[in-house]
Image (tube, rainbow, N blue to C red; front, side, top):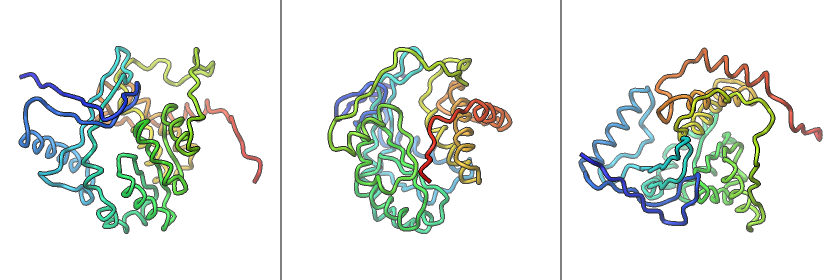
Length: 269
């Protein structure tokens, strides 16, 4: 059986990032959606994670992203069908979990939320001084940072999304991406990493950093663990590793720390 995936963008398609739109299957329907939803839920619970905050209904479409990769494993284009997140993760739903937000060491919020839900979530985090990590998701949706920037502690954009965020905050397109013709002369930890699909590498970076912060590590050490976790993702054939070699991650994090160089120091305090 051949399954056609039809990706229809809602706006201009940008290379190297996701674009809001619709992703449809040529076969299937309600039964397929329910089966995929149950599979995702089973994988979540099998990892020992709580499903309390997952909104479930047969009428909610599971969010889908259709990625197109180039021959080097880099993202060429993508369409993200995340409309259900905007429709059903409402401010009212978010407020049900205020007690969870107030007790969290770090809260990750991404730009797939609607403007109102994003603002409500960030306000709750601000109310309790909860550390907030903003994941910009895509060039288009990263512009949503403008309404919540004062609540954000950390963010994890790539270069394109950083430029989009800067332009959104300045209310004009005055920042442009500078493309470097050659790589930096600094030795890279990933020089010997094999080529593979890297769709989940950025998420692994964030996950590694946040998990380390929650475990009590300082920010620099946490970033080193995040980079090591990203390296593990780059070296796997799937989006993210099915298992993590903690000893290897610890070794790689140590290498990152040893090769780290101070490029900026705030002497004002």
